Image (tube, rainbow, N blue to C red; front, side, top):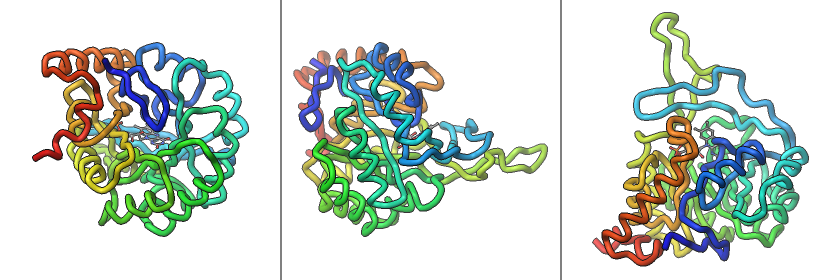
Length: 301
Ligand SMILES: Cc1cc2nc3c(=O)[nH]c(=O)nc-3n(C[C@H](O)[C@H](O)[C@H](O)COP(=O)(O)O)c2cc1C
């Protein structure tokens, strides 16, 4: 009942691990999969190693957390060893990043045979050196990265977008024109910050970081809804999902699948089985026979 297909990749249910949470090693990715996720996404990795920011990199705030990890990455050569150790039975997605079209396409080419899908992270709000949102906030850079990856690999790939733009449609249409196979929306929101009352110090080492968790859900939902009305390729919804009701809302907005990140930190990877059970019961109660029947229903109004 919960099975879906994303660009030809079969998943037992529409839930996926979001990039950056429990996605650094094969053993944690295997664990998340055993807990019921339909697919797993790695933490974003780059061509060369990157240490990221010093601690503190994460702080809890009302409605979620702010993180400024700075896209720490062991580099593609090391990450490939982890990818080789992931169980083969379930779908896996490599989240990759870079500072240029060449870097993206080189990393994508290195790993395309080890995964089922690739997700291009052009949307991190606290990346260093021209990576992340510096690309996804610029329509021309977005187009150049997507086009180069399309030319280089044959695996389907999704582009993960930032909500931190003036005009989302401009970026969506550039990426679509470049030839991506789907979209993931949204990366963390902001940047935002938190300050310690006693010392007046900004808490994060980088001062600013990306906001995630329940508070960003309405914005993520709007981004999915808006994108669905512009394109006819699949969308993965992510941002603040912590129960089956949130997941159903994203399906109604136009997501074909959903990713879960911050909620795992509070509730553990067991949240995947809980959300799947909830969606299944909801579908039975509302007489839906497939997840696909729910996708985009909110657009009828
Ligand atoms: C600690 C942390 C690390 C993250 N690292 C990445 C990353 O490496 N690549 C990426 O595309 N998104 C990353 N994200 C963003 C998430 O994948 C997701 O888009 C965002 O957190 C919103 O979903 P959520 O509210 O379910 O966490 C990270 C988020 C958190 C909280």
